[in-house]
Length: 348
Image 1 (cartoon, one colour):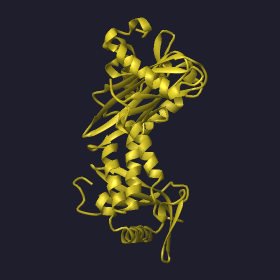
Image 2 (image 1 turned 45 degrees about the vertical axis):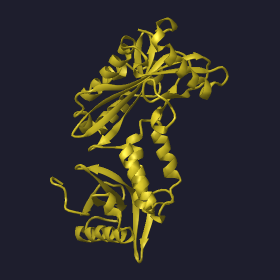
Image 3 (image 1 turned 120 degrees about the vertical axis):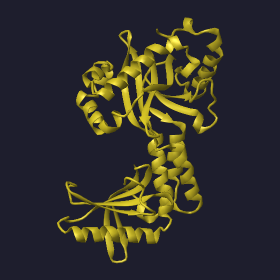
Image 4 (image 1 turned 180 degrees about the horizontal axis):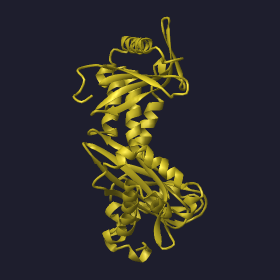
């Protein structure tokens, strides 16, 4: 059922007026006015069509029915998205997607362009129904095309204290809700959310442990990210704090980094937090000329871990293990060395 002015009930009218005020305040430009209604600000009957459409899309992604997913995309999306790209996404997250039971809709954001035209806009929505927008936690910023009804829907699933999100941007097209865009990624890993890592990052920043803080901000940002068309207010706040962080010399600039410790140098391709075995590890990917001498490679990996922990002894306060993965040019072969800060967790 399409939402028109006639279907807005008296009970929801005050909410609609509040939401419209947000649109006027932030996005009134050239008579462009946007309306965003969150969750049960819209009646269950009115939400049902786009909630069902998003659940069906999520289930088809989980079961690998990619032709069905592609058939339900908008004409606009088909100009930039191919079935091969959907297949690549499904393949990249195959193991995670197959554990997503049961799937459920957790948040919906219905958008209407009341007037105006032009390019895509970003619209501010309350994160929860009838909510405020006073704090970053209360805000969601979503993309909107000028004209027509559209919705952003979050579908969650997971197990073992781990939650993954589908975020669908749907457009009402040819009498049906069709997919304009899709994002898939983690929201909670082993019981820890973006807010948990964000709080820990701030603690480490306050303690002057900038290497730890930088990696924890990266973990927080990764879990708060929902794609370019759906941005949580806390993700924007996390990114702002991370940009203003005083970085240690090893993390300044862009990768690859050249880390120098005395006479030892290491070409570091990537350094990032990694969620594994119920813990958070620090992973470092380095490039070496050859892996033919496994003993020498292991010595180099251990040397890097030793140098790094000597420089930053607090690393094991935030990370269960440091994993150094050495790769040859081209990255075909690799050799991993793991150092635990405390007893290795069971099963690792």
